Image (cartoon, rainbow, N blue to C red; front, side, top):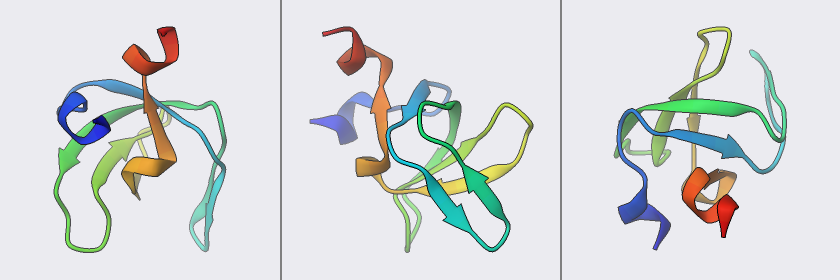
Length: 68
């Protein structure tokens, strides 16, 4: 299951574009997981520019799953 395979410090790929009033995180962007277990979203990630995003597990794919 994806929840157990993602840990803080892992790099994951965004599998769908996420738009908010603060900007857009585009599909296929590789981000770093900085936190897990938030009340309204599952994980906190940092994009290549350093911006924090809060995503659900279904919004990302771990590099392990991508290779298979």
